[in-house]
Image (cartoon, rainbow, N blue to C red; front, side, top):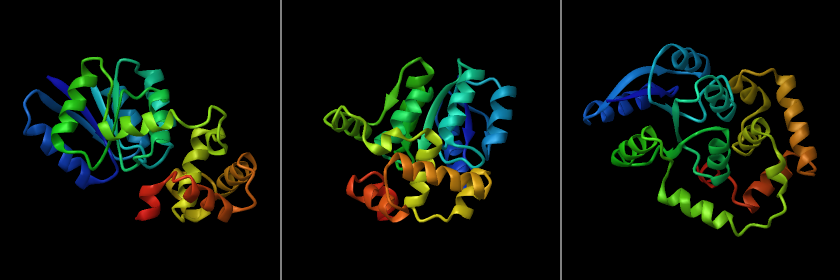
Length: 215
């Protein structure tokens, strides 16, 4: 029996995941969480094989959360389930310690396949994401400006491109407005951009956040 933990701030998503697992044989939902704080409490108190983690869960940067969970519980396998299909997010997630990466548009059978594979010690990435990784191999060896950003800065950068205000970003990441403003200043400096508009043009030109820009 594969014991699975669910971490997503949307109750409807958790309900859907729970139903998929309950209707399949060999899986058990051992716990659920709705933000980063309850996720940490859950993984510390509940024994499980796999954590399904929403990369955008409230309260903390998802990449940082993965890193802390793996530091505290190295044996817990993490499958990222997210709306972000960009390869740079997947790359950061794997480097932080994730064992699998799926977008929320994936079919239920692929989800079960991914859980089973990483629970047995493997790594899982969808075919579409694997193709994005392969395409990324053709990029110049020298780091591009956005690749110089830290995990937190990359998250703030994405939210800027999505059109979120400094106040909105601070609220969603549980940071002060001053801290978010500092992150923005560092992003602009590292990417040698004139202002936020230049950051957005850069993202569009390099197709960094196609899903968000098309939404």
